[in-house]
Picture 1 (cartoon, one colour):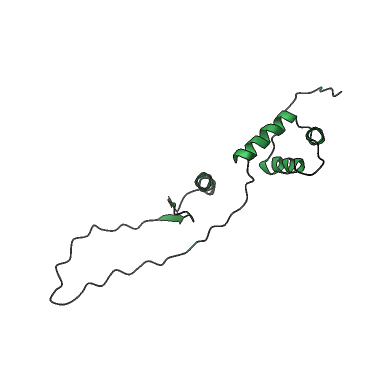
Picture 2 (spheres, rainbow, N blue to C red):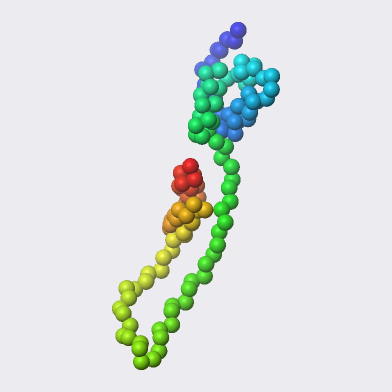
Length: 130
């Protein structure tokens, strides 16, 4: 019997810890109740974690690298000289764009200002990958 004399608190499990505990369940001869007792976790919580893992909502946050290609600015096209050359069209002024463009392997393009925060960018990328 365990007697709790102070204020009981909830534990916060990182996804990596949850997945490590769930991996123990896949070992041959392992009993569900033994894993729950060893880690002092309720069996119901283990079932919730397992369900979340099967649905794909419980995944470890791993550092992933995406290929980046720096493309130099292309020079303006040379106007053809000669008798067939027409008058140049009035093109709108091109403003300097201080944005970063990220193209994911599936073709999704993301353009963010160069002043974007790292935390905000991580959140956006995690949503796009998921």
